[in-house]
Image (tube, rainbow, N blue to C red):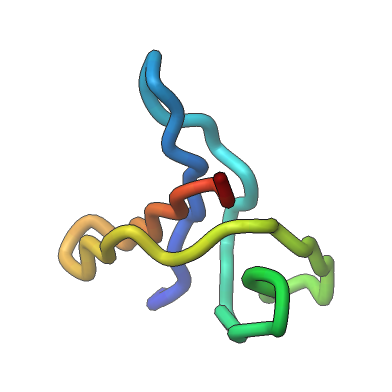
Length: 63
């Protein structure tokens, strides 16, 4: 499978936000994540980095 997990970066490390992410869509105020199961989450922040080999999306929270 090619889905990824999304993590929110914090000062003390990273927190899993959503597993099995299929879509990452930019929005006016942040990022919309959609899982392969149809679950949706909106995160106020921006993409910090992607680790494609590890199937990870890192999101930096909005300031």
